[in-house]
Length: 538
Ligand code: AMP
Image (tube, rainbow, N blue to C red; front, side, top):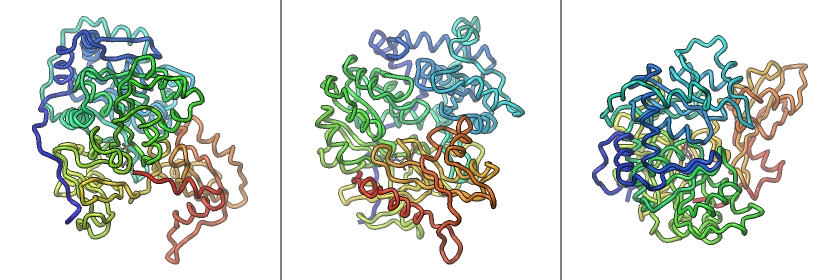
C-alpha cells in the first residue's frame, strides 16, 4: 500500500466570502456574531453586516476598486474583522501584515504588495506604529495613497460615506487575500488565496468540528495569520458560530476569563498557548466546562498537552489540524468523534476534496505506507501562487498540481498522518514561522558581523527558539546585548535570537558545507536541552 490518500468527495461552495457571510447574517440576524472583549464590543450578525456595508462604501470612496490591495497591520480587534469582510464585499484584496513587523519588514511588504491603503493602530503598549510606518515609507517608491489609523477622523469618516453601494463581485475564483509567509530565499512571499480557497477550507474545517450557530469560538490566535482569519473567521462565517476575541494579542489570563465568562464552546491555539493556559497560576479558578471542542495546530503538538486539554480543560472533542498558508491552510484534521488516541497522536486524515501523498524527498516517488517522506497536497485548497514570484511558485507547486509542503510526515495504513520532521530550514517559535535565512540576511547588515548561522533550539514552552552563531569581522568585539539592540525596532521581536554565541568558525563538512545540525547538537549539549528535544508530538 502506497502513502496516497484522498478525502471523501463532496460538493464545495461556489460563493464569495461576502456571499457566504451575507447568507449567515440573514439566517441568524439577532444571534451574537462577534465579541471583542478588550474593546467592549458585542455585535449580532445584522449589526456586523450593517457596519461591513458602511465600511465597504467608505473604502470605495477612497478609490479602492475590485482587485486593489488594502493592507491591515494590526493585532486582533473589531477593525480587523470589519476590514476582512468589507474588502470581500468590495472585491478588494486584503493584505495581512504581521503586527510584529517593524520598519525593515514593513517597507518590503508595502513595496512588494503594492498596497494602496493601509489601516493600522497608531500605537499600543508594544510600539509606535505611526513612527515605524514613517521610517518604512522614507524613500519608498510605493503606490500607498492612504495610511489610515484606527479611530482617527479619516477612519470614522469611512463609516459615513455618501458613496453609492459598490457592486457585489461574484467570482469565487478571484484572489481575496494575500498572506505573507517567509520564503526560504530570505524575503517573505505573498501567498495568493482565492475566495474559493478560503470559503471551502472554512467549510470543511467546520464539518470536522461539527460547528454550528450554537458554538462560540474563543480565538486567542492572531487574525493576520490563517489560524485566525481562516480556521477562526471562515468557520464562523460558514456556520454562524460566534467569534470571541479575548485580547489584542495572546494573553493566557484573558483567554481563560473569556472562556469562563462567555461560556465558549471552542478554543483554538498553537501548542505554546495551550501550555500557557494549563500552567496559568489561576487556572483552577476558571470554569471551562462549557468547552466542547477546539483546534490545536501551527507547530508539532505534544501528545501530553493534548491529553491535558481533554482532561484538565474539559475539552473532550479537541482536534489537531495540520497545513500551511499555501494550502489555505488545513489539509489534514481529526474529527471530533475520532478516538482519543487518534486525536492526540496523529494530525488526522485528509479533509474532503483533498489528495495527499508522501514522497521520497530525493526521488519524488510515493513511499509505502508507514514510511516517512515529504507531505504533498493537491486540490481546491492549493494557493493560486506566490505574488509576482513565478519561479518560487513553480518550485512549490509541481506540473501536476501537487503542493510540496517541505514538511516530513508519514501516512499510517489506516490513512491517519503524523508529522516526523521538516525538510526545509524553518524554525517554529510559539507558532511563529522563522526562516533562518531571513534573520541571517538581516544580521549580515550589522557592520561588525562577518558571518552568521541561525538555527532553532528545542524549548519546552515555545517548541523552538532562535539561536545565532556569529563570526565577527577581524579585530571587532561585540556583546549579545549590542546584537539584540540592533534587532529592536527593525525586525519582529520573535525573530531576535534568544541565544547568541560568538565563534571563530562553524562546523563544516569536508566539502566546505556548514553543518547546521551540528551547531544544533552542540548547543543542545552545552545548554542541557536534551529533555526538551525529546518531547513526543503528533
Ligand atoms: P504557516 O504557513 O504559518 O501556517 O506554517 C505552516 C507550518 O507549520 C507547516 O508547514 C508545518 O511545518 C507547521 N505546522 C502546522 N500545523 C502543524 C501540526 N499540526 N503539527 C506540526 N507542524 C505543524
